[in-house]
Amino acid sequence: MDTTTRTTSTVVGNSKIRTRVIAIGIALVAAALIWIVATAAGAPMEVDQGQGVMPVGLVPVVVATVLAGLLGWGLLALLERSARGATIWTVIAGVVTALSFLPVLTSEATTGTRLALAAMHLAVAVALIPLFRRSSRAA
Image (cartoon, rainbow, N blue to C red; front, side):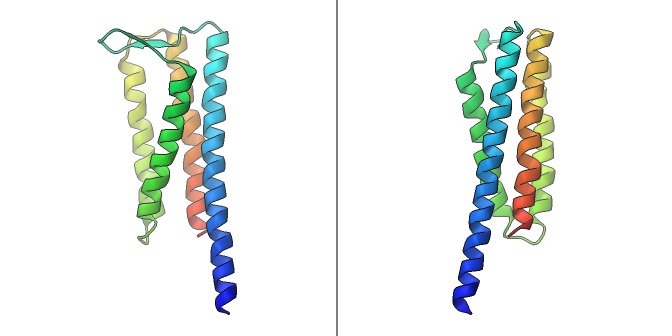
C-alpha cells in the first residue's frame, strides 16, 4: 500500500509540473507570436517611460514571460500549503495582471505598440492563471 501511495503521489506531482511547464510554454509562444505579428505589422516596439526610448525586443519579452511564470509558480507552491491557497493565488494573479497594464497605459508609445503590449500581458495571464489553478486542484 505504501508503494501505491508513493506512485500515485509521484504521478500527481509529475502531472502538476508538466501542466505548469506547458502553461509557461503556451504563454511564451503566445507572447512571442504577438510580438512577431506586431513587429511585422509595423508597430514600433519601443516605449518611453520618461527616461528615454526603450526598445521592447523579443528577448526581453521571452525573459519577462518566463520570469512571470516562474514567480507565479513559486508563489502558488507556497500558497498551496494552505486550504485556500489556490483561491488566494488566483486573486493575487488577477491583481498582478491588472497592475501590469499600468505601464502600458502610462508609457509613451504608439497605439499599435500599446495594443500589442496589452495583448501580450493578457495572453500570458490567460495561459498561466487557469492552467496553474487547474494544476493546483489536481494535487
